[in-house]
Length: 428
Image 1 (cartoon, rainbow, N blue to C red):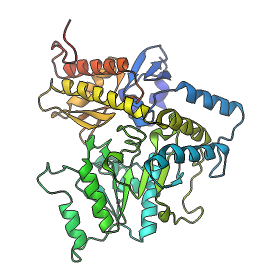
Image 2: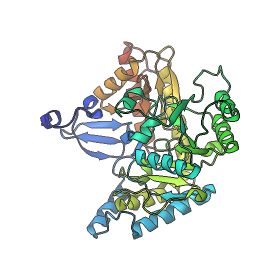
Image 3: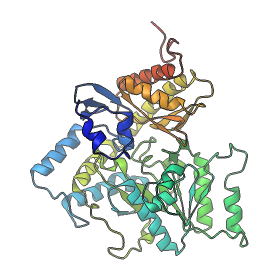
Image 4: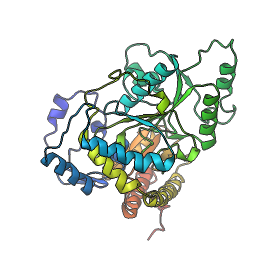
């Protein structure tokens, strides 16, 4: 297999291809196929960019037709029928049924672009510089997003001090020993604390890269109420947890909060095409024309697939109800697998979930064993101590169960228990 060019020419900064060295040639649904014809079950889903699987046939046909009819592909922020249709569909299918009134900004094509826009807007609106974020947060790789990210290895890559940001404890960081927001509320109310009032607080409802820590709904409500009392903006980073991954379109819906700014990317195109949105309350729309821009913020192919994906999956509650059943199935399976390892437990929410292992090396070994069995799963957490499961939201029950079976066998192999009977079904 001709893989030498990847070793000789591509930078060593690549990571996924080192753990998964196969050359993937085709993909469909929850499967990827290598050049040699091997089939891999994909519980990675492009790090959450493929919530509806690979090459959904109706979305694929729309892309082909749009290109074949010479539709505008690149348009900066100029008006196109594709952009109009996306905005109208997003308003009708997503915003209005949820009683949300957000302006829509296209900040650039990636998750870190929408975070940068959110931070810049919060500072412009409030006139304040400081941003608070949380322990184990991950918000992106550009300098502003890195400044609110917790991972020390990624922060070191900046090469310069990351300033105007401070970290505060995420939900249950102290294992329940300290009341929620005790420090934050005290310093905000104490004029002698020496802590500058921040422009905003940015939070993930589930920390996708930080170990699948899932915030409680009451904690999110408490945070929103505290910030409202002190006139501090709340930014929810829904780049990975949004677009249905936690069970509802926005990950914050169950908490009943309305963030001031929402960052959306990854699966918003529905097809794996680069696209991001920054949503914010209308009164925050204080931008001057061109004050924040980007060459690739008008990805019309993404507009085309995004609009249709919203119609296909979110026009009514049928898909969400079906997803809820699959979430229960996934979590029941994970709980049985976790019983094989003392101290293991379930992390995350919805289809952004996984299994925590007390030995930090175990998750990496499980992922390697899964790859040997033609399944793609990654790890999460500051020590990569969590095996992370992100199957497509529309995966069939048979493939979901197949993935759980492979995962269980991989856990048993990684922990030296391969002969132990399955907990997922009675032995034959």
